[in-house]
Image (cartoon, rainbow, N blue to C red; front, side):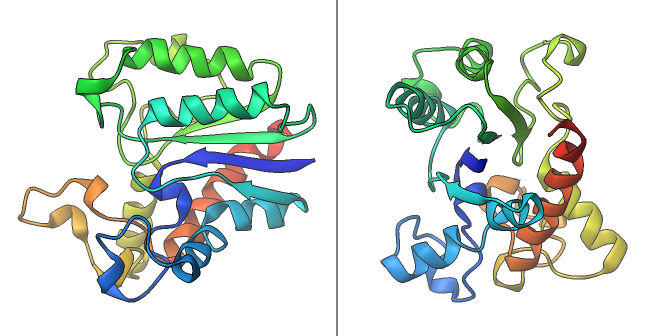
Length: 207
């Protein structure tokens, strides 16, 4: 059994580094990229599952890129029948002008590709179907808390514990008077551990 993880920068580990000069660098030097991907939430979930992991998160990815990588991985038989697959979805309108599929069509295509595997979906910082008028109860159970995000978990943790969970010592970023959007921020190292705890608690009884 292995843990295979797909997503955008919230999976790739952007924000683990402490040097703010990398904030706008989705693809910095190899050292920083490895620092990110090897210390993001997949590492800690894999530790709990006592298995190896592959972090396929990529900074800047939209959901159609995640779909493409899912298709390639399945087509090339890189994913095995006993693998656990977690997809943390990105902002659904990230590349709206270039998307050839609607939000719902893209999601159901992912679900169809993964239907024969143990898999789970999470929202990163934006509810995928917020503007789509889709009933939550119509979504598969493998979509965990589809009307919530893992960003919500971080915000609540910071409120409850008064501890920074955001990159570069940012605090209470949702109160930012610059019209805050969570996609402008990333978790820090502690934040990714909290995300891992949340994800593991949500899936452990299903594995």
